[in-house]
Image (cartoon, rainbow over all chains, first blue to last red):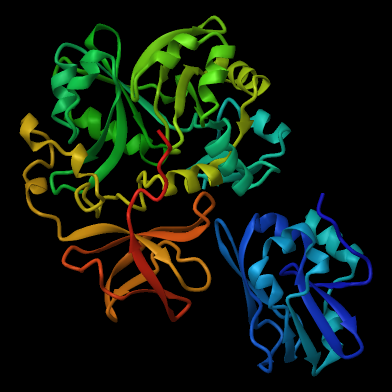
Length: 126
Length: 356
């Protein structure tokens, strides 16, 4: 069963958002890493880019497929987790411990449109 | 879309936690909880079992079956008279591929043909439509289960289950063996490059054979590993390396085209030198070079990737590409990945070769 962590926001594209002040850390859910399978490549995007909610920021590739990671919130990418480029398999092992990129939010009310852990868990079971 | 078909082993895969997908109209596991890379490595280093019951089977019966099949396929099937299976492309008049298949000797001079699941109905219709009077072509896919036991540990498992005699088969050797009270067709063949056997059993015996192999040490492996394994060994996949737009000569399968054996469908077209060639590339850029990504030589588009994947056995990122035949191997190759030109270099194929 895919794990869901309390206290995070979730998108219907299976990203999670961890909020620290005005900074949003974004990663992919356990459900997403399981669906992707063994990851072999991670491109976590570029810092200092201005993005809108729904933009593709990062790319994850498994043995079988490439998958875009979208930002659920708008703002400026302030840092990317480039360590994951060399060890994308860490995301399989610990999806909630691996943020891909961090965004300084321009409109934190966008978080209201995301799911709670409970709602996301139900969403995955649909 | 209709519901995907289920092999006799479907419930076994689900019980093992297989991640089930629709593959060519069949409900099959792309991987088990172990994952593609672990299943790949288990095949290279130990022994694994793959459910390949989705493969199609066609029986050709009657006086002249041998000559009829010889006139359909590009390879010379003479070796079936010595108890060997024969791999061959099956071509259209223009030399492109209907499919690739394995021809097995059967009782009374009849012939058993194993084809790809994706092409099962098309192949049956193609073969049946060319059959002369007196030749009976029967589609028997539903009667057969098939399990591939692959890897260096396969022989030991065959001994454990009382089939040491099958270990004496030569590469591509085939025969009938009793297993669990059923007559099975067994050949020393496979689609992984790691050696092993393919076992064909009556469909209602598949579960028992599957469980027996697992009990004796084989690990289950899914379609994902099957693809990375065959890719490293540079074994073609229909729809990728070969298709109805690609000839076997272009796909580096010239050794399976034998114009000297006499007439066969596609022979005339296959006498001409191919306009394209297959090459192996090591992808040196970022990401993974995947099917249909464009390939450039010295900045000029020369072809496309037919299969690209990380290669667990070599640790490299590799691709097979179909490019213009006149492209020099020492050109500066690039592959377009998400709009960017990323470097690649020609390397020898197959990418993986089993130690002798």
